[in-house]
Image (tube, rainbow, N blue to C red):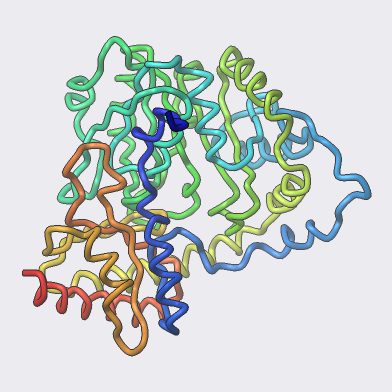
Length: 399
């Protein structure tokens, strides 16, 4: 009899963002230049104040409080209040990345076997977090034709059961770049209050919108103090993905009591990274003005270039730095892999993330990919040209 692994293995999805990395690595060993449009790793510089803070390491790097450094929590509360999100340090809990904030939220609010409704396509790791927490994901499908806006609440009503306990979404959206309208959020809040559900709002990309629509925080809304949980992170806001500092914010005291117990079980979030994140809060507004301007430039170029490819369907994203592209092929997973293993254009190729892995409904997204426009325009230009030429060749070979 051989040793068995956990039954969780059958529920965990491979990451569409990272699963093709070995093929990219092999291409690089052959001397091929790979343009990475598969992962949301910005090339924007981390703010200088945050980088400098890493030089001031104490002589003893000690454990910190399980809820996070009080000075950082206080400073964060001030930051949120200036953005119309009225909270205090007692509402703020620091986590090891936004990922842990989502895991803690699910574990604190839901019991094993409960259900969480998530609009799809969604950040693929939501599925993994749900598996860790022992809860079941129930998808509600958004459509590329609608710009991936939230569907009418009737669609949520159709999938709600006696086991439904929460709704989880990202706004602005990963992988779609959608920014949800206030009207649809009002409807979602009414739905949550009607059925006594939690709302987990992942707002890691809130700073990045490009003029078409403002991203509203869930904590801007009144009358949902017990329902709302804001998830945040320094990863994207300060281009500090490796810092692994996140935030869970809620006015629900009972929920925070459970979150604290979970936090105590993992001891504390990283002390040095919190110190750097605290310094990052002082980043001047000019930094975000420049970053937003740069991302808008990249968004506009990428959208125009992709839209010009014959047979492609894409909607202009309003936030974050992603777009879902529908291709005139049947198997985007095979195409993305083939681009890395077989296709070369000028000694280079382009890596994208197959979109099926962002859906929970079997069969959806098979002809879509996610593109992250995290490269400068001078790199996006050849990367998208390679994508166009690769698609043309792929259609010739596999039509």
